Image 1 (spheres, rainbow, N blue to C red):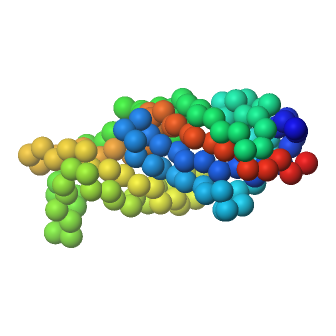
Image 2 (image 1 turned 180 degrees about the vertical axis):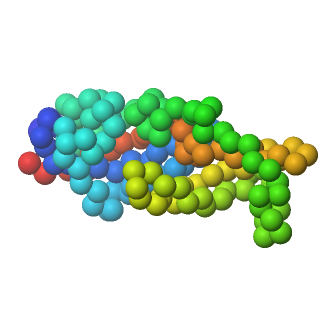
Length: 146
């Protein structure tokens, strides 16, 4: 039977979960999700761990935060006055806001999560919601296409 090697195109399926069991992404067998190994389409840990697998084989792989959504950075926590929200929004912990920021001369929209509201200050987290989390994948090799 053929085993997966670098450079192969492969049809895979997977369920991606956080440590608490929440599913963050699912690709089903019939979704026709095809990637090329060693083409940086998957986190390095996954690419390394699926080399040598055969069609129909399944494996569980744990990806560290630095290969996923990065570490949680304290400098992405900002305190702003409650008054900056005006009368449009009553900030509450857990609310996700859409913030426009400029980076490299271009405007981007990023999610920001309200972490805490204390007196007249709101703590906003600009980290990606999955930053700092390990990502767990249950991967299945559907078909090696080379």
